Image 1 (cartoon, rainbow, N blue to C red):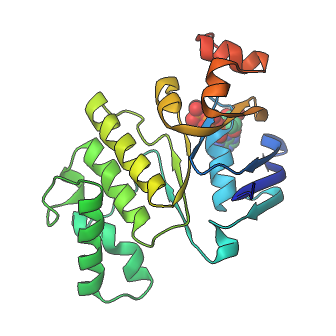
Image 2 (cartoon, helix red, strand yellow):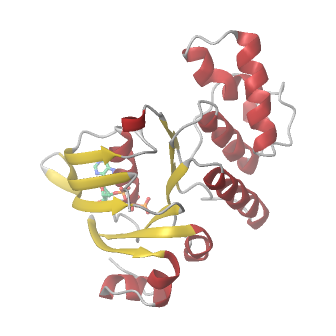
Length: 234
Ligand SMILES: Nc1ncnc2c1ncn2[C@@H]1O[C@H](COP(=O)(O)OP(=O)(O)OP(=O)(O)O)[C@@H](O)[C@H]1O
């Protein structure tokens, strides 16, 4: 199968210390790739390195969904980056950076707001909306340039059950529309519901790569087995 993203010997070092890696993997499925692992395992660092936010060593290769095909990639942070703007202008911002005229950018932002089911006053201040709606807004903003790949770092951290459910629905819709998704989560239930492929990290290393149900039902590594059982891994 053709890989849409692969890494070979990818690592990130800071201050003489290796924060993550070296890791090597190939993502080939058409589902969501979920990065799992305990605190400090390197999930955020891996996503940031792939997106180009960290100085990295090793090779990253983009396949049909990524940069090689001229598609852009978007990143949704754990806490959405807010600007002193209206919700609509926040969503439209990447298009304005691209030089798209304000009226067109706003019209396209409205389409994305509807797509993610934002139920807020789009002309209101972004600071005033709830955590779940902020996360949806961040996803709308990430989607507006029609990315080939979307990275999300713990998109449902600190959200209640209802908002989590809504975000998961949006993620499956995005997946079905053809954008590849790679995301991290601490929530094993969420990983089970969403994952097509799993990368399980522990202490900065890739302990195991698996396919959805097979990984959850029969993990191969000791660390993943213990993690899925609920044991604390240091
Ligand atoms: N800015 C930083 N400076 C130095 N070390 C860092 C920095 N950010 C992360 N680290 C270290 O890098 C390693 C990987 O951290 P990372 O945040 O990627 O893990 P994580 O799996 O995302 O953890 P969590 O689940 O807690 O978010 C950890 O040992 C962490 O302490």
